[in-house]
Length: 308
Image 1 (tube, rainbow, N blue to C red):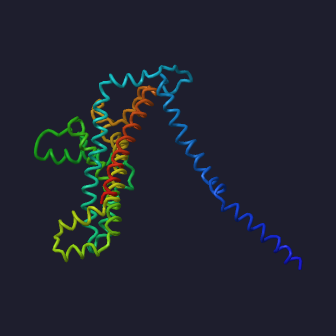
Image 2: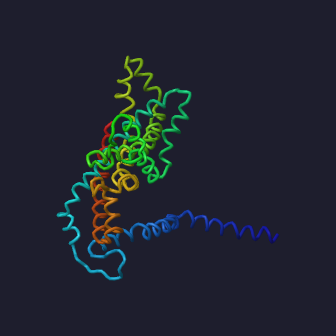
């Protein structure tokens, strides 16, 4: 009897607790831990970076002086900035272009019924899981001036090795190639996922209408891959614009700053030249460039999706 009375009292309490847990106000509290983590590890460092960019802090001293927009004015007269921004755009736009073209070609090929397509997909994606710094050193030992694998082959045909990583006109494109090679697997996987959700009925209808392979691609595959193109392009673009590891491993931004990106220049300013205030302003410039370019490309590609 007592158990039945306790059960009758417990049921309304359970309903009240359930109604509280399901209320919008309670559900909003679940965002609090994520917001706290965001504030501590993202918003606060970002705000501090903006503050430091207006000082002459060296990165180590307890004392520093407020200099206003001095670091930003300095960027306007810095002879290295224009070339570094150009390199950053080559790494971002160039890698994105090559990664998506080659990744789409691989996806189209491996979306067919091929016996070893699982193995091929694994091999193509495998470089993605390797640390970019390690990947950079692997290719450095291939291209290096003395003892590099490529120069060992060249010396079989001529007497002098070729200093490819020391040539400012070539080393930027070598780094772009290495970054493309490592991360084209991401684009391939995204495009494979997009290809596999396209209904086969569309291809059958196109075949009945007499469309050949190119017509099917341009009138069926390409329009329906628009969401995949958006994701792949934006991800690859952001990764390329903030490229750091491969540049550091292969050239360390040299010779001079000939192959430096904004990320590597910011690193060298802080740790090698102890110029944290200028490095912070460089970081803010990189943030603005990546944000403006990425949002612009995202807006254009999203409009293409809606227009299909």
